[in-house]
Length: 474
Image (tube, rainbow, N blue to C red; front, side, top):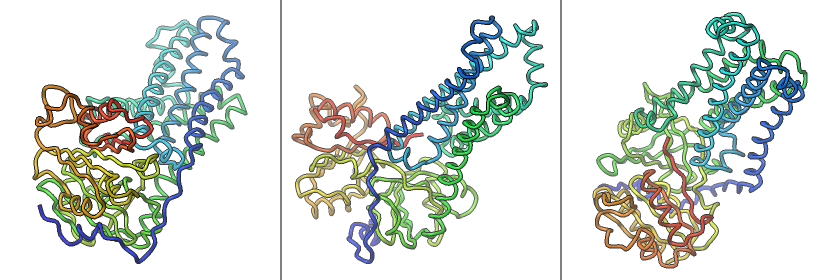
């Protein structure tokens, strides 16, 4: 492994500008975001009741089915807009929940929205069939071909079905990240194509002024959030800071570090432990963004990312040339110093998961002897930043443990084969970090390893509020 001058330079203090620290995230942001989500559903139900939705439940089977179908469609549309807000990178939401929890909530809301959409279709068609004394196939054809915006609604349903199918875990594993990300953008297509159907055929749009005002307002705010936070803000930061590739440094045969320079980076609101979505403007494929964590504490004149070859996006990093321009979205993520509650720090990394933790070790405030890093890798050759970590450990008094070897096959564990002599996973945590319950614990690595690692940390007595993790799986 070779560590060139720029890589070593990344852990030296800089004095040319004082870097502006991001403001702490107010705790009430999370509460407000949750309340607004539930309030939107309650408003939709209230509008349905005010539109005689409840009264029509008892006027006959056809009206019962149609009214329930209307309600399920309205709630499905509202949850679809909630998904848009979850994808829009709104700071209140992004900084309150973090990437891993946001992804879980986004997936949960998405499946509920899709299931309610299917229920809406079934109930509406069944109600109309009873009302018109028709058979189901003829009624379906009549609805699709004669009702306003229905052909677009069918296209919207197809687009949303593609998004849902590619969100299933087994399907995600079969797709490259770039392909999955492109297909996932069909959610925006689904939202856009569903609007004409709601305007031309939805009772709330055609007859109820208050309901029409509500729906136009939330659609407008959702569109504004997308334009501001997914388009305008990334474009402004890209142009303002003018990031370019300075140097590409091989760390191991399949891991590469990219050093980035730019203007006024001390004004960028970024912390160690966060990540950006990068687009390297070097030719075909530039439009596909890839998320990479900072692998060094951000400095006033440069950023550093390190990635393992795991797809088209990360593989092309090794072929980047100095001077390549870079477009960025971010910073994102909550795996930062802001979440600390104690004066002691323990970090558990596996594989390329060392990148955000290495940056945190550099930036966090702790006394010599109050920080421990446990680094799990397959072999010595796979230890990324070994020289830097040992230099940092010597300078700041970090206790450093390497756990090397193949994955333990006898059971699901965070330990390698050679660690099987510990009585349990939790025992290994306590042995390596005595009094670990008094530590803030940061964990980063592959999903299955993190599952075992977090379970062991909690079993070792660490309170849940002192365990910090963020998963970057898609």
